[in-house]
Each structure stands twice: as structure tokens, then as C-alpha cells.
Image (tube, rainbow, N blue to C red; front, side, top):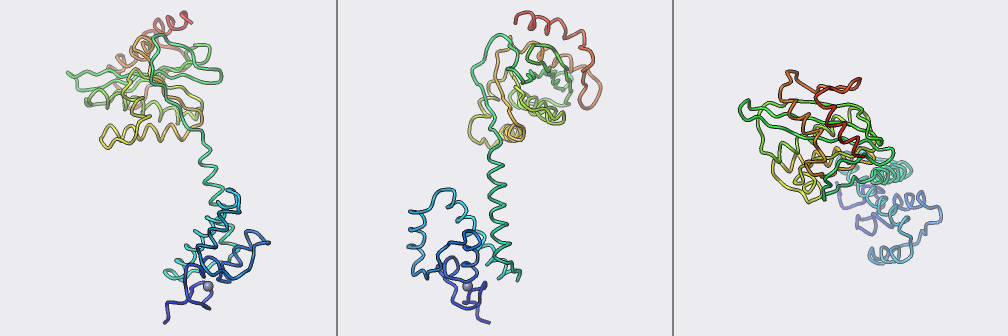
Amino acid sequence: MCDLFCPLCGKDKETLVHLFANCEFAHASWQELDPGWSREFVEKIDDWLGEMWGVLSTAVLERVVMVCWALWETRNQMIFNEQCMTPQHMVAGALNYLTNWKAAQRISPYQTVIEGVVQWKPPPTNYLKVNVDIAMNSACMRMGLGWIVRNEEGVVLGVGLKVVEGIFKVREAEALGVREVLSWIKTKGWERVVVETDAQVVTKAVCAKQILTPFGYLIQDIRDLMAQTEGMRLQFVKREANMSAHHLAKYSLHIQDDGVVEYFDYIPYFISHVACIDYLRN
Ligand SMILES: [Zn+2]
């Protein structure tokens, strides 16, 4: 068996310029992309690429690159799996991939704010704000997570509590709290949420580059969760602006349940006075 021949047409030697420009399969693919595509014989791949780069718009070049990639994939499928495809299917698949990829890039990137304010403020219009904090009890070897959800008028919509057995270092525990609250927000299906933490180390790490430590993996989870939802923000605030969540976290050290304890219909007494102070100040 001769493996030097083009696997797509079987008619000529396989070279780069044949595979991408001169092969009849490639011709059919280019004409599928654009019926006016030139059928001229190409001598050198460099000339062919150089000419396209000089003439075609970025939008067309993106499609050309996708078709080149698809030609290479189709060639490999043919060689290794003996699977063939029509030029029509191949081009449609490549363009569909490009469309999906572009749609995925459009998801709005999340924002992070590192300079902390001292006083709690309601979120912008059409946003919710969730303040989160953690508390630790080394004697009992447990950590408490607490968070409070408020709307643009500063009205408390709900609170959440969770106890986690074990003790982490402070920054890991703070990151765990933020990750927990983001997962919880995701289960609610909410978009446009400002999450506030009084751990600057967490907001800084979320904007920084990859960190390869256990802390870094928690931070990567936070980034992934934030990127999955539209309009997410992570803000650092000073301890004074995070008092409601601070009280909730301390309280959560005493809860017995596994999983999240939520209050939505009424706000528990142990938080109402702090939330009320935030509300009255605005
Ligand atoms: Zn060929």
C-alpha cells in the first residue's frame, strides 16, 4: 500500500500545497465556503497563504483557518479511522464550530474590585448583592460560612448558613466561603450578582494569574463559577461593610445540619439588627 498519496483524493502526492490548495476535495471545500473561489493551480503554499493574508478580511480569514483545520482533521480521520466526509459536511461542521466558539467568547467577563469600601452599599439597579464571610472555631475544629442576599433597595431577601468540619488556613477558608456562595447562587439561577468578601487576598488572587497551590485551585473554581454566569462581580470590602455576613458566619458555627440552611420567608432575629443598620445608613 502506498501511503504517500493524498488520502482525500488518492490522485496525487500528499504535500501541504496539495492538501490545502490543489486537492479536488480541498477545491470542493473552498467552493463550498465561497462559490467564487479561484480554481487556479497553486505552486507554493507560502504564496497561497501570503496572498490570502494580504487580500481577505479578518472575518473571511477566520473561516479559512477553520476550513484548513477541518481539512487536516478530515485527512487524519481518513488515515487513522478510515472515516470519510463530504466537503459540504466538513465545511458546515467547521463553520458551526466557529460560530459556537464565538458565542462562548461573548459571555461577559466578570469583574473584580480590589479597593475596599468601609460602608455597605446596595448593589446597582437590577443586581443582587451577596455578602459572605467565614468564622472559625479551632476548639471544635469547624468553620462557619454565612451569607446574606440584598436587593438594590437594601432589602434583605434571604440568608444562608453552612458549617464545614475541619479547619483551613484563613485564606483557603475565605476562598471556600466565596466558592460556596457562588455555587449556591448558581443553583438559584440568578444572574447579575455582586459578591462581597472582606478577604482582599481572594479578590486579588481571582484577578491574578494562575497559582498552583490548593488555594489556587479554589481560586480557579471561583473564576470558573463566575465566568459561567452573566454579570458577576467579586468585590473586596472592609470588615465594617461586611458585618451582616460576619454575624451569620459566627452563628453558623452552631448549626447542626449538613448542607445549606436558608431563610427566605423571614429574616432570623440574630441578623435583623445588623442588616437594619446597613439599611438605615443608606
Ligand atoms: Zn488530494
